Length: 192
Image (cartoon, rainbow, N blue to C red):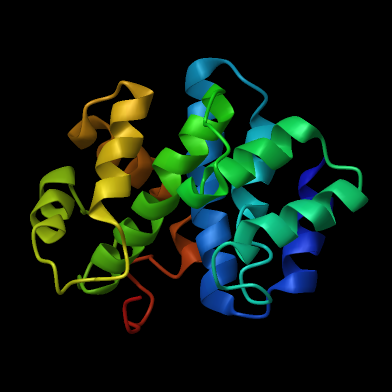
């Protein structure tokens, strides 16, 4: 598994620029955690990049990510990678019994929420802090499709305090702010 192949897979199945950017955001968080935990950064990053590759074709549960897993299996992706991706959806019934699966679950919803928080700020992600994200989490109307419970549970499953997890992911996403459309110099867009 390499990044070029993962990006091609994502682009083959995903036309939405925002969904591609979501994959990039989760990839950045996954790579940062792989470095932190001494894991395979390329593999973890690729898992983050492709975790929602099938979402446009199969947006409803349980098709996503079950149908995507079938596609990955047919293309020779390992069981470890497929199980981690299946585990990011509770309804799949696949336990998050590896650190890879736990990190993917912990980063998925949070990356989307950080993006939404950044898009409504004049400086975007540049000066975003955990406390601002935590405050926005209390506003049920803001980015209402993002599960706050999954964000909390993800940090809990990792054994990392929520505020620390948020700060870590913000920092990872800042590293690719231009690619995500979250650099302060870029024009504002509508949040998720």
